[in-house]
Amino acid sequence: MIALRFGVADLARTRFVISPLDHLLAGSARLGVHQGNGSRSERWWRDARRHVPHRAVRFLEVVNASPIGIPDFMVADLDAVRRQLTDELDVLLSVPQQTVEEGVAIFGNRLGLPAALARLRDDGSRGLREVSDGAWALFQACLAPDWPDIRRALEADIAARARTAARSGIGEMLGTLHPKAVWRDEGVLECTLGELEGSFELGGRGLELRPNYFVQRSISLLAEPDRQSLLLHPIALPAAEPAARTPAADGLAAVLGPARARVLRAIAGSACSTTELAQRLGVTPPSASAHATALRAAGLIATQREGKQVRHALTDVGHDLLLDNPPPPPQA
Image (cartoon, rainbow, N blue to C red; front, side):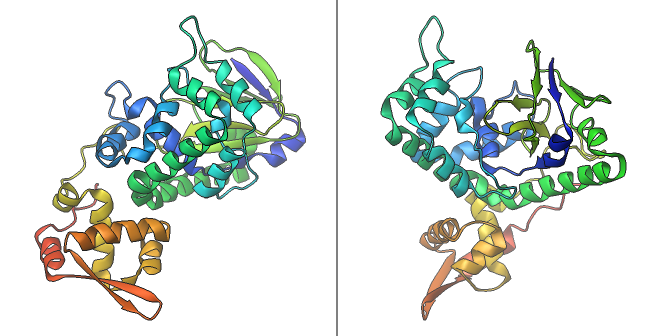
């Protein structure tokens, strides 16, 4: 058991953070396989693996190099609550070589250091750049289309917990994060994390609470003296949601993949520019442009230039495909 000790300043500086990089790490750790338990990460990975770009290979190799986890420097540390993946990857790129070497060293055993981590140590800044590029490519190809829905679920969870904190105090809210996190009246949060034991003073820096859509049955703690400590925890499931659910069939997604099915349906509403398409989907313009290029190559949309902008609209083929494949009904 790890005891996190809060002072008054720690309670005041405890905050929620939404991290895209955390979700990439949690979704692809151990390649999304969690003993066949039907977890969200397993279900996401089952579809995402069909769209993984080659550029993402090195990122996945590092994330899955060791069964005991990933180096601490892979978890972004920056002073922002609503984070963009680009910001987090900039932090990763700025990690000093000495920190990389120290971070990977703890993963060595009698068989040596896992090959992917040894390469990362030896490649210096080039290795971090390739890992960062791989993370970006994986996000754009596999997670970006689902990120707006995931973010809404995270924000709803944060809002509910904030109401608990306002009504009953931060300590009471901390005690609801997970059955393995128990709040004591003396200002201590006791976290049961396997065989780990000890006591840690937060030192006035507070605690970052990082809700994660893919983490459902566990909590993770990163407590270090030179950075704000963080606690990765699940979002609360609605009472009516079953532990595992078989999604309704979506014929369009089966043909195009869920990301491009969503893009085609977004364009169906009305012709739009790449920027407008990105706003509808909640993704970056480069990601929206890449999906539009693929749909145009398939003959499902047409693109016309209007001044400095281009506008995307359905072709007759795209329109007919949508008519033949309506979206599935929402899950009850």
